[in-house]
Image 1 (tube, helix red, strand yellow):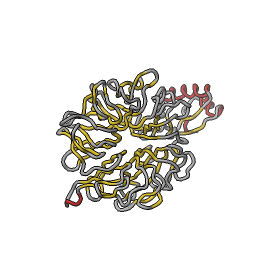
Image 2 (cartoon, one colour; image 1 turned 135 degrees about the vertical axis):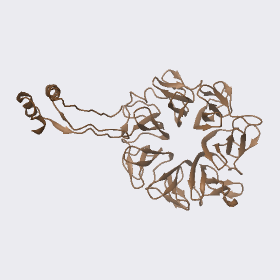
Image 3 (cartoon, helix red, strand yellow; image 1 turned 90 degrees about the vertical axis):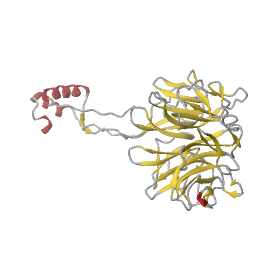
Image 4 (cartoon, helix red, strand yellow; image 1 turned 120 degrees about the horizontal axis):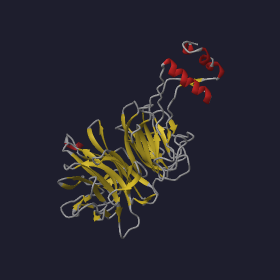
Amino acid sequence: MERAKHLPLWLSLLWFVWPASLSAQTCTPQWNSPASLVNPGLNNFVWALAVYDDGTGPALYAGGEFDYSGTRVVRGIAKWTDTGWISVGGGVDDPFDSDVAVYALAVYDDGTGPALYAGGRFALAGGITVGNLARWNGQTWSTVQGSGGYGAAGTVYALEVFDDGTGPALYVGGNFTTVGGTVSANRVARYKSTGWSAVGAGLNNTVYTIEASVDSRGPALFVGGDFTASGATTMNRVAKWSKGTPIPLYGWRALSTGMNDRVWDLEGFDDGTGAAMYAAGAFTTAGGTAAAHLARWNGSAWSPVGGGTDGTAYSLGLFDDGSGSALYVGGSFSHAGGVAGTSGIAQWDGVTWSSLGGGVPDVVSMTTFDNGGGLDLYVGGAIWPPGGIASYIGRWDGCLGFTPSASVPTLAPWGSAALVLALAVTGLRIRRAGRRG
């Protein structure tokens, strides 16, 4: 045999005495083991995930309805570290309301440096009064102030950074009608270091999601929720805010006839046929066309997406597991497009649905993060990956950055020892590359 021709005869014979199977290591995307990030995990729903660098390196932050990670108190918001989940400045609270939660997270620089903004249902952050919206600079919490007060007078469900041509601003969505103490803003508001302002006439009911994107007419902000109008103009559960020229392009615009029920999330994705806006929610029609909880807006019309899901879709995200960028859909469903193993979460590549390790229960949030072993997809909700430990957060490992090893023989233990000796004699080297944990 060519591989053994320079070995002593007795070592060469080992290749015939012990069978060897030649196989290169490959990477298969999978849910991480319950002994790592998910254990002990968090003790209730995770509604928001974001990555923020406080100066010590990028870290994963989670927001939700939880109070603990194991025995650690991490009320409403937590940061992932090498020692597990830790409290973020004492977390959020409300002495008069037990339904405390963080529903949205976003990183925004108001001119004083990047900070993590948290929105939700809470009165206090780190013990200071904030009013459902607070700013974390990596060391302390502070209020998001206005001329006569701070925060939002109602629950905040969505945060997004968008530049309408006048500079980046933080857009805030929820069920409020007043922000900054005195500024009237119907369910959507804009915040800069100079203060708060309304976004046109706003919307007549709760906003659950805001997504910045670009369409054929330039930068635009897409908004989804329970609303049915902006002022006197009908806008059923989804709308677009844009600022450009000519003047008619400035303001709120309907996206066809919209949806027949709530829109929970929005995400821009190009499936190879052009950029489009995808919507997920409780709806069953979009633009008057049947669309089971998932629909695609191409700039002029809505269309269904691969048969949709058989239950509410709550969350959308983009991720490349090594096979190309795809749209990931999370929610409370048993199947996506009728494909087996797509419970709770599924991958849509623009043509077909794929399972993620057999699925998990109820995914309501997701983001990507590199914890040192390559980019992975993190999902929040009622998650328990294989292993049976409920943690409300899980990690889907991708294959980007994975380097397969050269094909090597697989031997019995004594055969392996002989091979090591043979390699030492001939000066051969084997480079091993394994899947990260």
